[in-house]
Length: 131
Image 1 (cartoon, rainbow, N blue to C red):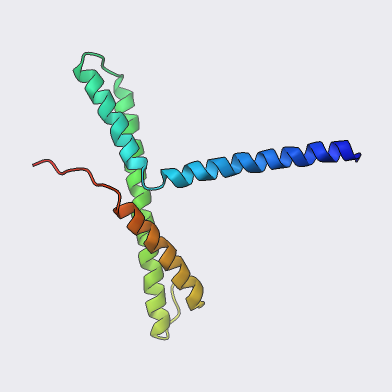
Image 2: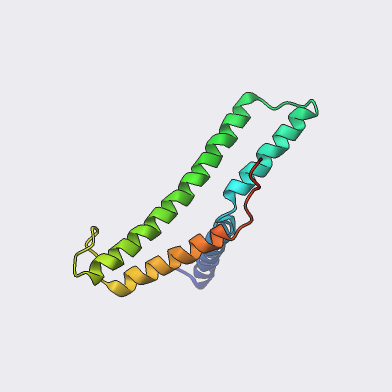
């Protein structure tokens, strides 16, 4: 392969890596914000409907299902962190965890990372509860 073709090939690989990095950065930014974004979009549609510009009914169903999906992801993250803590406790008691991992350090690091993520998500401003 000539040097010119190698340079083009490598430039293409670098461009692809940058695209993947940009998508990962966007997904990281969205972490903990998806429910609020969906809520804001739904509020916008409700306000538009109140002003006489109704949206099709399927839009509300779509937004509701996206909101429930975002909430389910949050619950799953919390359950995974709780399972890591239970695994650490079982190792301390001399038992083998359900998943068979016995490396205490990796379990502790997983639990710490998930705990930090849960705290960051919980520290997001919550929506007021209607009276």
